[in-house]
Length: 280
Ligand code: A2P
Image (cartoon, rainbow, N blue to C red):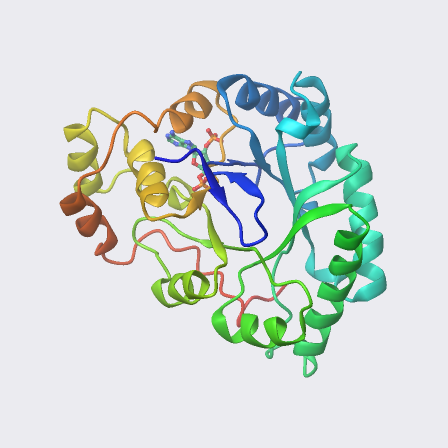
């Protein structure tokens, strides 16, 4: 299993990232980032709306690893879409994280038809601002999150720089196969948010049986399964032994038969958040 994937712009991205959604700001954020980096995570997934970028940034600063050896992502929140607001929101994120560039910046959710008549134009303008920041060297790679193929298609038509990443909900019981296929066909790397289904898939009997076979936890099976499907999992934890457990997935391999069985699992653990219906 590769510890890096290569993006469509040639940049390498660590194949396992550390999630920070719902991590409380302050000491908890600082300590969990320090712990994660100490364990070996090089890739940290942040977002302005998580309201913890100051703590995450302080953790990055205190972790003792050189900036160039880390891969840091953040995301533009929905309220900040559009050219000028994107430029401003990006500066605020950079300041909160105490960084002078990001490895990856994502549009957190697409502007979509249920909320905006001109949703395609809004996404195009947001993207144009991100391209400017990219051209100034402030963002190394650009991407989106929660974009379905029908949101990606118009964006890709107006984009001068094609998206390198699409971060979507992805875990056993919720695999969004059409979206993953579209991304793979278009050379867009998929990242998976809530790879443990926010903890909700961990007591599934079939996953428990599979995990037992490999002498691993269900969480480790979920993470490894995503990796073997070429999806970058972003497990979140603030618990030191879980942070370690979730990184300890490079020493076993899930068999083809078990991969197929997990791929075919019935729908469980879905957040219910879909880009064409969300209220935010
Ligand atoms: P905590 O942060 O308190 O350790 P996801 O990444 O799918 O959104 O899941 C995150 C949730 O799963 C959090 O509630 C986190 O709790 C919990 N979690 C993370 N890793 C593990 C693990 N290895 N075993 C059990 N629960 C976990």
